[in-house]
Length: 279
Image (cartoon, rainbow, N blue to C red; front, side, top):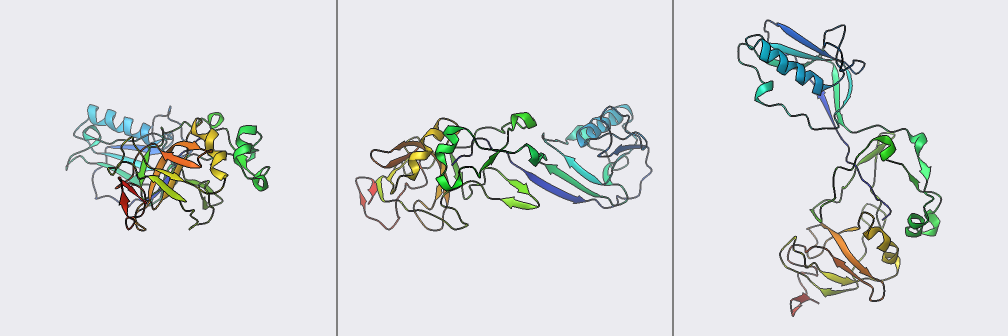
């Protein structure tokens, strides 16, 4: 699993309808071509929704009896930090605060950042190449996120329920799959043997241990200290998928130990329970 850094992309497309008819006393204009140092007028729009919200608060504080309309021009608006609208951003029945797509404009609010694909480079780091199968070496590309001013949203959780979508990347309008093994939409490996089912309560420090087949997991060991390895699987029943962080890989014993436990421990629900482990 060569992925070291991840970022989450999400988008929201808004078709903003016309608001109720009111006497408009203050208009704040927003445009992708605007500047946040601008005044927010039609001829001098601001560039971000965050700046527009600041102007709304200033207008409400100065003239609380007057309505405010934020007129958003057509285009894409990246929102890379949380935009929170609270009491200070609200109006009243007689002086409402209205956010509207100008002339029913198509406004796209995107929690993502576009990057230049020309900055992609072939992976050359020997430690990363060692994780890849020989047939993939020289074909995998990487991007320096720090150079793109993209910061990590935070560490991945040790336990995820029902999803392994730790990052979402789109290329040419198509969502790319996260690096994984086995490949394929429904590709799964199997545990050779359950050594310990671990704690039967989820998210506890004594995770399960299982024996694996083959030698592929050996290549993941370096990733444990550089970002981590997560495994997604149906650890107990075939209808509950859980994702767990790997705590250790022992190539001599061919075992993988989880950092935290899963719901009711690993191992088939229908297997015999001996000394707290499903065999």
